[in-house]
Length: 125
Image 1 (cartoon, rainbow, N blue to C red):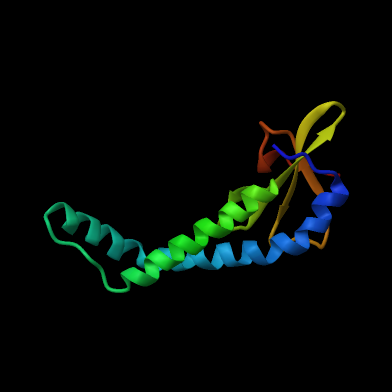
Image 2 (image 1 turned 90 degrees about the horizontal axis):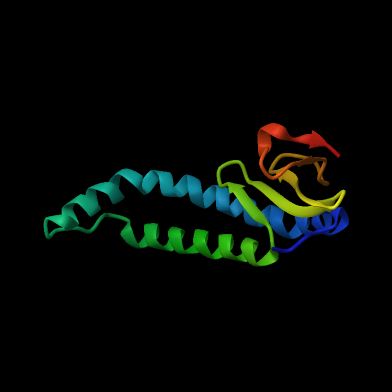
């Protein structure tokens, strides 16, 4: 687990923000394929299968996985695809806490929470 300083996390937002927007867009796109994918999966169990737009669906899944992996490799914890909610582990008073940020918030991180509290337990820095 990578541990960030507040400055490091804030500097990384410029890299992470467009990735989160892409993830949110890809996730919304996946929702448009969901019913057709379920029908194709059910048909595949009976020896049929395939779906209109299947190659686009696979491409979107691939790109979503690729960007998610990139975030993970940076040490960023993706918590919610649709909201673009992320956490950055950091140290506070000798324990790990999470700096918390989501798309639509300011240019810098303003919130943190204990690991077990999650988003509902956010507190201002």
